[in-house]
Structure formats: C-alpha cells, structure tokens
Length: 122
Length: 107
Image (tube, rainbow over all chains, first blue to last red; front, side, top):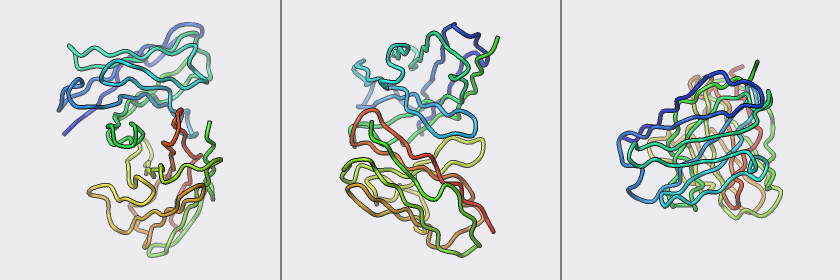
C-alpha cells in the first residue's frame, strides 16, 4: 500500500521560501510511471493544483504560481519536494502531496498525503 | 484555465435521501472528470474517475454521470458517514482544476 507523508516547517516568514518534502513509502518513486503532485487548500476554501513532477523528472506548473515554484525529486530518498519562493499570507494553506498514474495523463489523484499546514507570518 | 462550477455550494438532506450535485466545466472536457470526498481535517479521497467509474472499494451508492461540460454526482441513499465536502476535478487540460466544493450535511 502506497503512503505519502508531507514534512517541513509549519511557519514561514513573508518573502521567504516555503520548502516541503513528500516521502513515499510502500513503493519506489522511480518505478512505474507516475506523476507526483503538490496541491494546496487555504482554510475553508477549495483545492488548488500547484504542479507535478513525472518519474522521468519533467515538470509542469500551474501558470498562476509558475514563477515561484520548483518541484524536484530525490529518488535515492524516495522523496519529492516543493519550493515556493517569495511567500505572502496568501500562501497560507494545507499543502498536500498526491500521486497520479499514467491513466488519464496523470490527472486522477488516487493517493494523497495527510496534508501539512503552512502558515506565512512574521 | 478550465473553470469548474459546482452547485449547490451546500445542502442539507435526511438519512436515506437521494443527493445530487452538479458540476459544469467552462469548456468541453469529454469525460475527464473526477469526484472526491473530503472529510474535515482529512485529505480528499477519490470516489469516481472518468466521470462515471467507481474507484475500487467505494460503496455503490455513489455514482457519477455526464460528459462534455455537464456532470452529475449522486448519492442514492445518504448515510451519516457521507457527511463531507465533495469536489469535482477536471483532467482534460493543465492546470488541473477543481470545483469550489459542495458541503453535504444531515438535516
């Protein structure tokens, strides 16, 4: 059974860079063909797809965040990571990592992490 | 971006009632639509993919239909454990986009 677990600082200062890691267990992040995504949800609001990285390392980002987002993968640690630069209070949200397989061009999120709250505040 | 519009934003129904949620896409997305259930403090859970396919292990009281721009999600007989917020999500194009959610409560 695949499991995903987010980790990282719960508090980030404005203008700094938010950094989160998603650790995948129950399977190798580099085996099979999967897309690994980050999705966020401000308190009481809906879900926003941030971006994804494919097993090969290629990435796609939401244009609304593209200039500030970097997603990378560390296959040796079975992890993928999110960096979001120049954060503001509007970036305060629960951040989820999620997996999608090749079916549906990586658009069906079948496994999710539990989510981690990141607050942007001085 | 493809905009996904759900209605209603919330609803209250009795146990055993049939519940229907609609989702409209801003352009034709064929059947590239998923439905998720999110309980408070939890991650979303995939219920329906390809507009009408039930994910393994999901109770058969959940169903989905539609194609193109108009989609429907139905709970045939509402149970207390179905209290949650439900989201549609398109995967025809990038970026992936979600509806704003429908909160389902027990009357």
